[in-house]
Length: 22
Image (cartoon, rainbow, N blue to C red; front, top):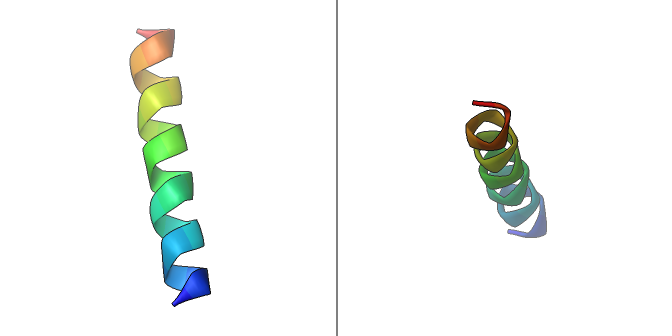
C-alpha cells in the first residue's frame, strides 16, 4: 500500500511539474 501511495504521489508531482512548466 505504501508503495502504491508513493507512486500516486510521484505521479501527482510529475503532473504539477508539467503544468508548472507550461
